[in-house]
Image 1 (cartoon, rainbow, N blue to C red):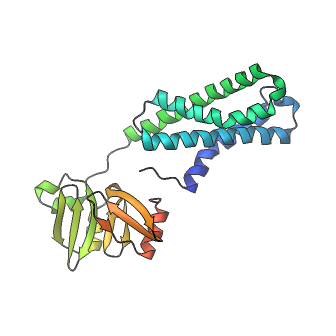
Image 2: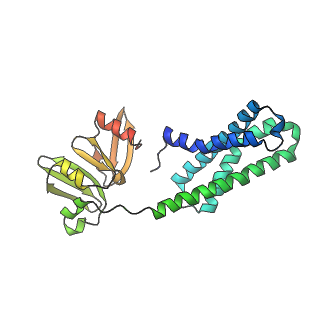
Image 3: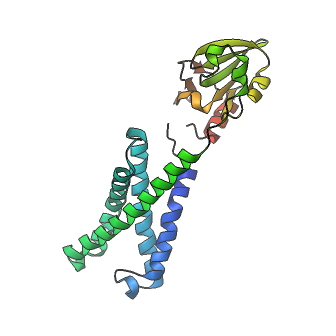
Length: 238
């Protein structure tokens, strides 16, 4: 469930920004005749436009085809970057003729495909080598049929907690705070004082009539308080 936040956008634009500064200093493709100020505006503008195009393609692929191979992913993402800068190149180099414009766009595409391919390889290598989190100790308190199931959420009912998991539901005699501690190292949050929800257990997070609604993968709808809605937003779930 990919999420887009201002933090992710700014982080994704940092590399294009730095690349624009470097290109403004190197002044390739005959831009050495321009002033430093113009080169900074020109190259940073192009690289940021390309970065936004690449990010747009990345977001679409993450939602629609996350299993796409690195080569195809890099090709499509670099195509998005090239298409994003094409209008600027055509507008600024109309006097140069069609051939030089195509050459410039081809060079931009080649650079973009190399950068995106390396980015994809580095990202997937990080995911593949990242160790699997250990199993929550809470699952050891459950019957054998629940112990290998994915934990979705925990809800409080009087002196008991209800464990919501891929294997179904089960009641335990304990406090919610103790159950939360035993759910470590799973990532999750409290959307309501009587609920704890694991990030891996979220099916959808939506807003309706100003209210935040969480549905976990078992189909259960989780109540969200005003303070809980703030935690959900801060966690980037919506």
